[in-house]
Length: 144
Image 1 (cartoon, rainbow, N blue to C red):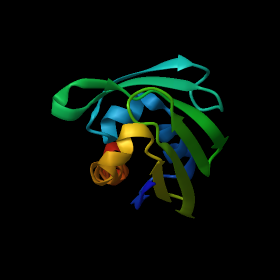
Image 2: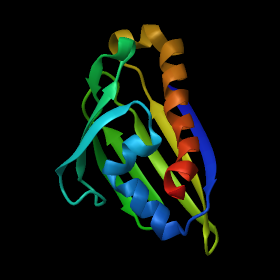
Image 3: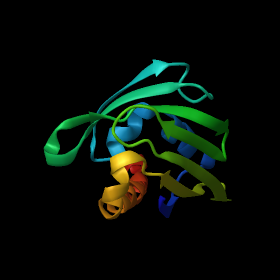
């Protein structure tokens, strides 16, 4: 299994950070590989909501990375599973208010390779780490 985890501190109240992360339209603001995103089902933040997204894949070619919300506990937890595309990781955002205006966010991403993907475990682990590291862009994305 490929596993990555990254934690950042955002100078915003926990409710603001949760709302930002729950709105998939914000994905391109902090995840550089996201090209396009739209709400495909649900209200966006509740369990069962699906966000359709196109990402830059190997060689810059577009790949699908649609995801479904699997757990939503405002304002402290938001989990998802990727339901389209070549890789199907699961992930979670755990939010903790460290002050009334500061929030710590831990982003965890896990991927269990199946089939031929198991032969590419090193490359997959690097990609999972890259995706988790994108959370470092969140404070800047929310600063404006």
